[in-house]
Length: 516
Image: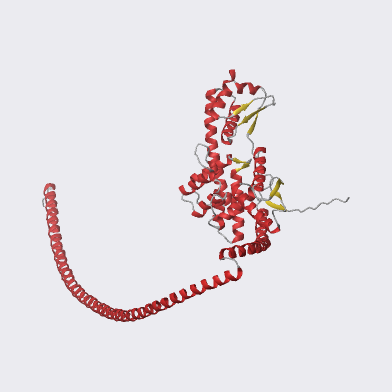
């Protein structure tokens, strides 16, 4: 037997592999055709089922639409029936009302006719009465011997003294009642508010003292031929006083903001050591920014201390600017905070809105934050600012009425008036110049002397009381009550003063004789 050649063997293996590969392909094709046939059958079943489901849902949707249509139709018919019944009811009511109006108009016509007849009768009776009255007057004139005008004059003269006496007695009784009741309550409220509000007072000055590390620094501040001191005064508007006071320089200015800017700038220059005009200008700019930031912080601190929220940011800045404003030596911001606290305490006693009263008290002097570049009184400026930033009408009225320029329209405005007077009248709170003080005393005496029957008057107790001596032959005891009231009213209308002024009217009769 011959051995198989290797090439024949390889060819046989390849042929077998090819045959196996074709057989596998044929098998896979048949299995794929089987799977495709099954998938087609399954898809046909799914499509048929989907068609059946769609038709079923379509029928259900049609049924639902028909039912909905029937319900809407029934509701519409029901609503139309209700409307028809309502219209019929309204028609009946209108007809009944028209019938009622017809009846009333007939009754009114009958009443008008009756009234016209009565009016005619009254006119006739009035004419008869006038005739009788005229006859009686003529008979009385004949009996008394006086004419009608003479009798009236006689009666008025006889009644005048009685009326004056009764008026004086009534005034005394009313004042006594007011003093006993209202005065007692007012004192309780005011004393309670003052006791609960503790405030510090520091008299504001128009100068600031800057300490120096040594006296050699004075020469450096003055500079060559005084150029440094001139530059500082020009940039800040403050007078620098370099005198013999050891290790100190005095800054003098009536504007506290400019004085504070100059103080901060000078302290920075002293600590820096480089003092020349360019450096001075740079430090003044930094000091101005610091003061502006301080003003904002002071305003925010005041609002936080009082407990008032929602105030416009510009008003808060103006409140901070009042930290550098004074009124008769009293710091305006401290005064406003105290007025706000007092207003809140008084409002709580009277059952008013405490927060609104505090807000009005805090803003009552806001016009003082505006400098002299804007014309107008601080009251008018404050009212304009409050209206500009949409403040409550109660606050605007309190600002406008706190000095009595207009009538207060709310109790809170009266509370702010009282709180302002309390804060200003505290001992040591304010100081007045001698000229203002003497002018007020003189004006008080002139008002008192302007009334008829006043002999002379004296303003005493620093203008808190005025004593008026009257001529006893011209003023009697009843006239004294009316005179004191009239003088007090004139003082209230013509003068501005903190606190209250007591009016004392004194009538003294003296009889002298000589023993011979």
